[in-house]
Length: 289
Image 1 (cartoon, rainbow, N blue to C red):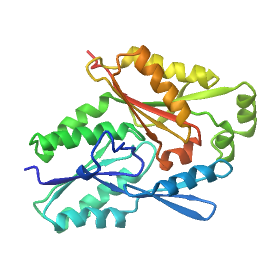
Image 2: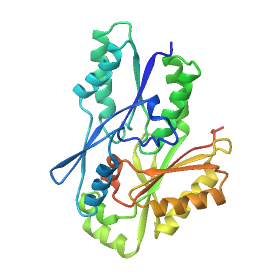
Image 3: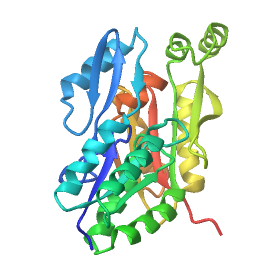
Image 4: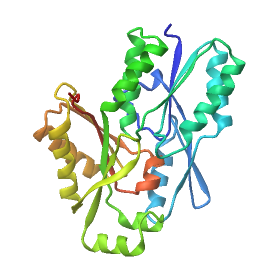
């Protein structure tokens, strides 16, 4: 049976040039800043995204997890239409959204015996989500059942890498994610933290570089050493710095086996935490032997 809906959430970047938006659904997430709420989902207008990035330069933003009631309403919509649900969640290592989705699943399956709701913790965020959504959509198109798709995705997600860099340490200071002294010293030394989503789905600082140019070079070196030569797509998502993303794209195409590099704007759900000017990168790594 391939009669199931594929759903993700607003914390995962799904570039419409990479995955057809009509093939999946996205549950919106709320980003709050200066007494204003930004609803981030599949239909978020570009002017809302622009307003978020304009305001976050001098402000602090917070995000809200998707509530149990919203999950229930969203999943129930498709169950009522006779379709099962495959949900790809923001990493459970950085948000409780996945836990809320499991609670919604338990509640709904008591109301809809014999039906299926599959919730997968992607252990990822940002552009990494697009690889998983595309895989899910492709699997469904090839005729994989909901359960077969689930098993394939659980294996595949272990190969999806999310890394990136932070350029704005002052944002970390304002949001309390770095002390004033650390941010001041880091800014004085032009330190740029390099991020990595680890195997547990936690977003960690894996390295540091002096300057954005060197940090971007480290990202390219990561690709050179880890990318599967048979999986030559790279996804870049920038925090309102398209020039940086396009420069990195050019370097990737020149110095790595990558043949396709997609660029889009990083979801505000992620940028609320790592700041304006950040850059996220995702790719498929080599199979470990």
